[in-house]
Length: 173
Image (cartoon, rainbow, N blue to C red; front, side):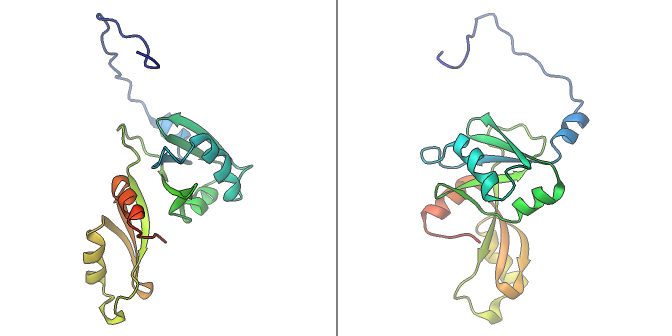
């Protein structure tokens, strides 16, 4: 099969039993993992070249394409990593991409959650309560943080949902 390697009838899957991950967790402790959401418009290599400069950290970030539209940004300091995370939601070539702190998760769709700031517009101020904002936010995803005085909430949205939201005209930030 083209690009997939050769599979023989007598091949047996390799069982991975080594689970010593403390070195790996330490090695990737200052890493963000990302995924493009629109492969027709987004090129991972160009994104990796562009974003560190856009964040003003081109000399302090290394970037790696790990295939299937996914990539890593490795930072030298926690402060640099946090300064990038505070800039969410992330866009490249007019399309969103997912960027979260790396975790030792094995799943084809990881990362699948986008932290997305949503601000209520035209919603009466006297209804900006914790309960009302959470009820509205839960319709979109998991409500992480509320800023009642600004009518804003940080919602963890599944990446498939965010594609629908951005195509439907709902804007983040």
